[in-house]
Figure 1 (cartoon, rainbow, N blue to C red):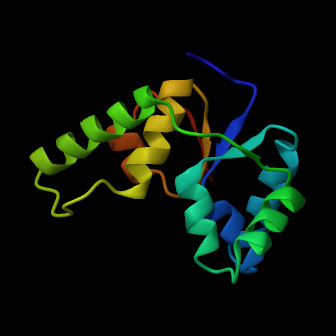
Figure 2 (cartoon, helix red, strand yellow; figure 1 turned 90 degrees about the vertical axis):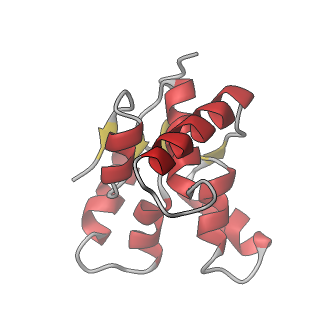
Length: 135
């Protein structure tokens, strides 16, 4: 299934702006502006954003302010996340449960959408078919 109408935004891009990261704030703000109206997050990205906030209301306000739509995971994307985690473990990965990037990458892969991110290594390794918008 392909839905190129949106771009999945990794939490690091949002955190660059909210945390006023001196190195990445300008790039991230420019990317959010360039893809305005097409930006989306999923449950894992939402949870990552909540880490620095004080309430779900604050998170919802941030999501609305940035114009981010919310997309749920499909069963296909969850299956792909599990397969990526299996490959990670077979390569000697030490984590005992799937990492957030596996869910994000699998979601993008299942939908056929790009990811706006600064963290490319794991996505490139386990989801090479996903287009990455990165510096």
